[in-house]
Length: 119
Image 1 (cartoon, rainbow, N blue to C red):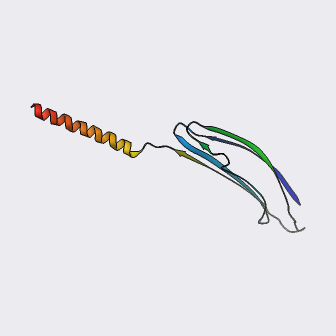
Image 2 (spheres, rainbow, N blue to C red; image 1 turned 120 degrees about the horizontal axis):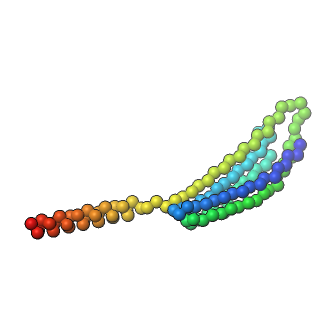
Image 3 (cartoon, helix red, strand yellow; image 1 turned 90 degrees about the vertical axis):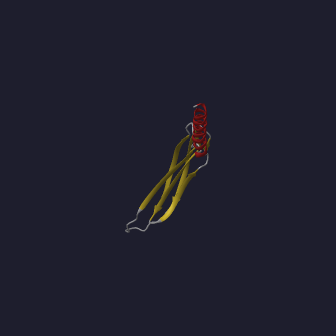
């Protein structure tokens, strides 16, 4: 038996204002009686890098495979579709917050010291 398929895809990656990187992947497998007939994989072909970026990827791929089946025996066909995506965002460094708080604390200490000298 000849099995064929036309895989069409539309992939959309987008980062927001804090985005550093975004990527996605797609994996399709077809098994007949536990044996793989064909595999189609799109894995991070065009990652999106930088804030406020947009990527639209379209495509298609023809797949075909030949499988020998025995007459009168139960056969199983199993299709597996796996997708995944990753996005990395920037987070303000903790050191920035520490510097701000320590600066405010220092200014408070200086003001208290001045008030004590005036009294």
